Amino acid sequence: HLGSRFIGLRRSRFRIGFAWQVRTPEMREFIRLMLPKMVSHPVEPMTFLFFTSVATTLAAGSVTAVSFARNFQSVPVSLVGVAFALAIFPALSTAHAVGDRRAFLRLLWTNLASITIVTLVAAVGLVVVGELAIRVLLGGGAFDAEDIAMTGATLAAFALSVPFESISHLLSRAIYATRHTVLQVLASLAGLGITALATLTLLPGTGILAIPLGFAIGQAAKTMLLGLALAVRLRTLPR
Image (cartoon, rainbow, N blue to C red; front, side, top):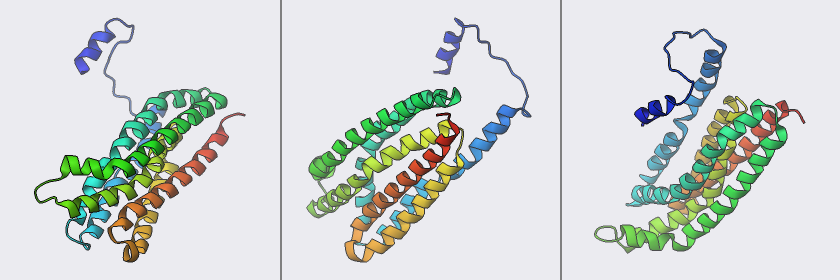
């Protein structure tokens, strides 16, 4: 892949050179933006490490059910939420860099609407056909009907988080486009805390379903906080 890029560069005026210049405004900005972003990377692994810890206290097979259900739930999030957010990020960055508030908002709202509609349909699909897909793809052997039912119910509850988690990727990239990373990290940490609190609160009454329901509540809270953070950042754009 890197070699193909070098071939393409031969047709342009750009030339690669080596220089050791670290005390530059660009490097300082890079470090300023990078360090907070690094803090947010462990949030998702910590979330599911917590879920695994909780699942080990429940019925046999709970850890597997949560793991399999999350794998299915993450498919629409990756295909829609992550993909849209990554694709639109350069355009959002450009709009913010030139101070074009109208273009920034147009891009944001268009993609927000697209992600919301598609992921709502995907969430409904997971609820309707999730258990059937689990039975076809995973059923058999030691993974019996009871395990399929448990995983299907867990997936149906996880489906509630699909739109929120997908939208959070877009809002995070929109905040990054404004050259700010701290607010996104704070929203992620707050979402982690709310997820843990909601899960532990629901656990006595709902059992394993407390895990996906707590995750959905945490993602909803994180999404709202990201929206507020983005509104604050957009004040820097001229009207």
